[in-house]
Image (tube, rainbow, N blue to C red; front, side, top):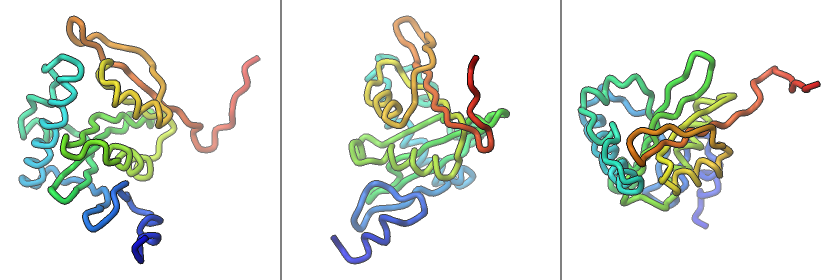
Length: 185
């Protein structure tokens, strides 16, 4: 193990699962920056093209979103870079009841199977702890469903979005701070 690797592995920031000279930390993305916005849109299109093929549906709104729509979406974003540029991003909104709604999780096809999605979700858990988190993905997107299930999400329902195409809604709950467990009679 290289000198200093132990220190980096214990870093309290948003450490990506990658190691080596190109490992990065997740960072907040500033969508008011035109270059960041373009890179995010390019990542989004590449990532959602893979999901569209997996689920057999190319009507995913993120595939057709304009730069202006993306900039004005009202979501917060974390991104991770690799040696080539923006490799992945996650976005979320906080609902009125405190629920964390994960809106998008994107990994560029060049960076698949390198721990980017896991690192982004780890970073999000640290940055935005929540008693309840929700997410949805195409029911036929088995890799995404597996990832979310490994992270403690359970299916909470499905929603038909087009003939033959559905979304699986997932949620993860943890006890809100200060709330004792309730017993049922």
